[in-house]
Image (cartoon, rainbow, N blue to C red; front, side, top):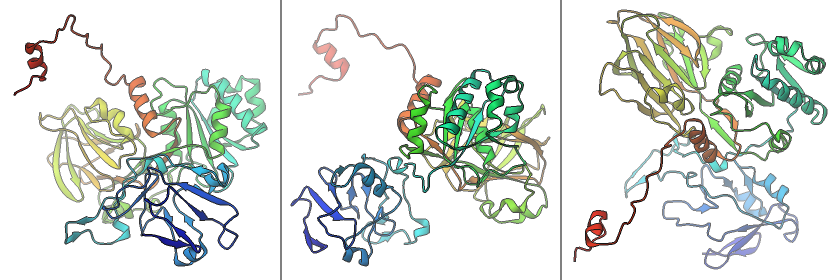
Length: 486
């Protein structure tokens, strides 16, 4: 069917290949028009919604939301995507095509003629769309935190080049950790000492950075990125990681050409990978926070600011037997229900990002960081049937020392803040609401699979040689399953 927009007849899919929409409301429709190319982008609408450029059109949580007033004016409100900025950058009158994605769908919540999910926006099901996770600066970034790998001379030259360029050419305020400047490698470098007068410093556990930093740049390995995550126990700025470490699984950028790469990010031309973090709270026996019904309701203000019992974890929470010669005997609860008792060396609760760290060494599957999940992996379980499992993100996991345990257990958060837990104590874990917005070098898929291949040598083996002198014959056909049964 046809509809009217701004007094102009809008044709259906079969009648037209493109439509024009006025973005200026009451201004003349002959000025500043944006053309949407609809060729090969509208698909079947039998599932309760249509796709435009691979984007699901919805009514309640629409990427293109239209009110009756906007329809009368012919203007549109753009949500979740920075399409308006893209239109301005590309220029009006040009065709804009968004990259298609197979992931940006909203599951159909109508099941047969009668069944459906309760209509509640708080429980709406939406699969994350990697193609729509693009960096947007609400205002130009002015402050940048540069984190350098400690005690590394190879990273010093890159550090001084980057900081000098950010200050002199980008006119940004640069923050650096005080311990980096006090390092002997830096104190003996005249360039570093000259830059020391122009940068601001902070000290871990003393200075709060959450509302001071607009952008983070890491120079180091995967551990440097983990350390950067620990500095922001709430909302974290976008982080760009340059590989100067040993493995570099989480650091996709090479420092060569850093000027162009950083400039692209500062201009907002970059994709993001939202890496989930875990909220971990260690509740001591009979403490007031242990009586709070759900870990999501526990705020950091309920514990001491400097406490290490309430943390956002980037990779994993590990509970193990420590130095005890006995098996670790711990109870595992999921959503308040005891699901199993772990008897072995311990248990790993990891994010999808952490699934390729300690967890994969313990036999877990490798989960793409964009998958909303929590991975539960036993460490050397004394059971042949105890396999790793993946549970939905957002569930509450609780770990307690079993009453039958012969010893206590130890907890570490991202390999740090190691502390002992006893019977009656509990470790409560869920998905945190503050992810790490990691800047992609290419895109979410290419970066991850390249890291698997280059860093972990995933599926590397010598190729099978072709069989020499293979001649088509009835016997060969039967062996390869190509024989006709007629």
